[in-house]
Length: 68
Image (cartoon, rainbow, N blue to C red; front, side, top):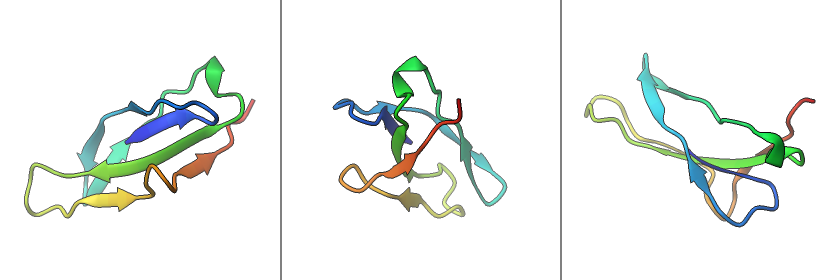
C-alpha cells in the first residue's frame, strides 16, 4: 500500500500480508497526518491462487480523516 499525509508530495509504502482470501495491512499514522491520509493499494500475492488487489491510484487515492 502507498500512503502519504494529505498535502505531502512524497508517497511512503507499507507492507500487506495475505489474510484468508485477501490481504491485511496497516497505515502507520504520525503527527504529520493531522489533515488526514491519502492511500492506494497495489498488492500481488506470491501464490497464484490469490488474485491481485488494486484499489485507488496515485492520481485518485482514497482519503481518510484520522480521529484525534
